[in-house]
Image (cartoon, rainbow, N blue to C red):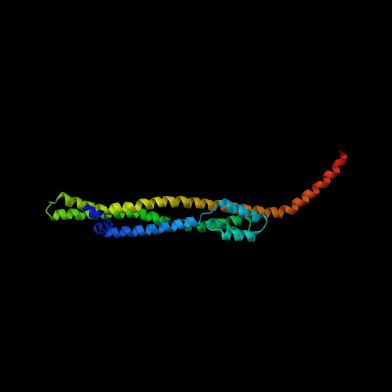
Length: 236
């Protein structure tokens, strides 16, 4: 009898209606995990290479080419860089606010479904424990109906049936909680990359604009120094 319960059909049949609840939670958790795997795979990008490529365009004042490269790159880091390039004419402080707002808009996308995975991993053991308690109550109720006399085989089968939901709940919860920790770490690293890229973009754009503004002044200073040196040479 116990070997029959170990089969999937036996587990579903003998575990009671809460088994279907656990299967539903497992399906929801699996969908969220697959969605997050695809999201982080698409968001994977070498931030250093992206910033190096954009810096070459920014220093040449080729903002259209920089915009095209940022729009072509995937992921939230590229979208934050694109938002900064769209407002390249703003002062440094305003450009920093634009980058910060763009990064904040990306955070909900990054954290999407991660809390759902955590919720399923916490809820599944509770549902399994509830099923076990309900099964134990049914088992002892049958024993009391028989006048307190029952065989060891029947009692062990009843307890085994009651423990099915707990086993299934932990089977669902443990992998999902590990996936939650994995996605949480990736989300934090991605947010850090966004912040780093935003700071670098602000500095690149502002520095390039300041260099262009002070270039004529530097040329005049350099040109003014040469005659002074020419006048001092005969005095020596």
